[in-house]
Amino acid sequence: MKNITGENNKLVFVLKDGSEITEFTAKETELLENFPLLVQGNNNNLRIKVDNREDIEKFLNKKGLAVYMFGHNNTVNIGKLLCPTNPALGLTGLSINIGNPPEDTIEPGVNRYASNCNINIGDNVIVCGARLFLQDDNSSITIGNDCMFSWGIDVWCTDVHTITDLDGNPLNFGKSIEIGNHVWIGRDVKIGKNTKIFDDSIVGWASVVTKKFDEPNIIVAGNPAKIVKREINWDFHDLQNYQLNRMKKNS
Image (cartoon, rainbow, N blue to C red; front, side):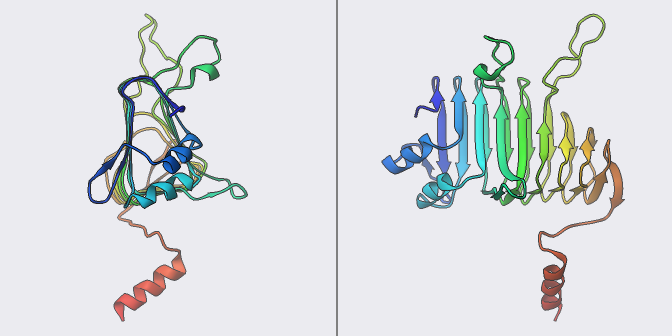
């Protein structure tokens, strides 16, 4: 494929029965050529879950996901993912970025490659508009199952530029971002490097997450984000339908 260059790079579709598809039909190959996927480097792996072989074409026909990998020995695992798009509302889907394309850097000939990075996204994740960035070697982003992302969201496990002490030693390495299971990220949230949001939690609208929260069932909000409420949970449905469903279950 013309959009994957280098040695030993792999694109794998993982089916519900555990089998793996690495060789593609003519139609699938045609769709892949137009899919927003760019890989430059060696030993990079992209694995995507679908239910059946027929779902590969459906997946590639959908808009809302873009993957860019520039570097070596990187792995991206994508579970069952829904990325609704609506330009009028600002819903842009999900963009995954490891490194930066060399031709787009400010300084000619300077490659912003990132290597030995990992992105893992669980099942039943909804992303309306988010960008994930890894630009530091050996860094990672993990997103659990049953999460919901609003739009205008940036998840950056990097500062891009370097902060040093007075002897010139780097201080600001990006290592990891961890988002647990069943986490709701509100609109226009920014999540920085070396942070964590634990299970069954909510990040409030326009918050900036700058530290680790190891406690489940909380709402964090503000800039910088802090815990504003404990002992909560949340449901995907709107209030009216949630209450109707609850009444049916209790009747």
